[in-house]
Image (cartoon, rainbow, N blue to C red; front, top):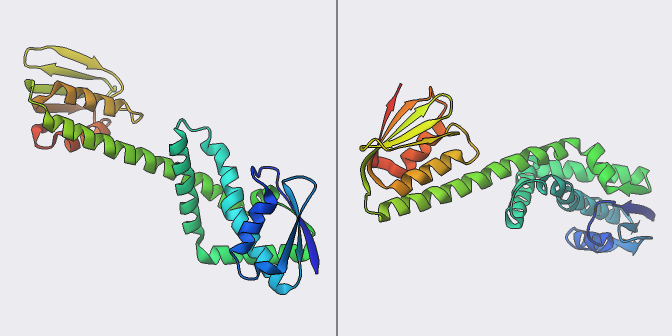
Length: 255
């Protein structure tokens, strides 16, 4: 019989209840007793036999990969300028991608590492183990948080383009033709056949400015759109969005 104290400083829920749930999901979990410690973030695990030791290691692996990793990642995602729903989506996708990268063999290796650790130590600090013994996994969480954010932005962009295409098709053309001239310094000029002009900046950016320009073009509702791209490729993102929204209404002239 062996006893191990498990503690967490970042856990936002009752650690004993969290571990009970994880133990209920692994084989042999009934061979492990859990006694709450001196505070909600500390518990005492009593392992009855080898089967219980294996179950404790598997349950702690799940806690580290799912629960502790989520708390660790929440600090990074919490700083992003997103709604709560979007933050939850980024958290979910980042963890899913990190787990897929780790794979089943990686999970098994972590369980074996924890079995060795528990056989030699009577205390485990969740954050310490995560940060010092699972450094690569923590790094992968950071990488995949960026990937998940990119996926979210890409999805929102697709939704916006779909709305703009529907809006453009639903409108009667207000102007016969509009010309859009793109310059390498990130500025652009929108002109109609009466030589009315609108000057814009930031059309070479990727932080929403391109989408705003496409939105403006849709609101003008031209029958035809001619794009004169003098940006030397800097406005490729904007040109791609225009092509997707205006389709056969647009023609491009590149320098």
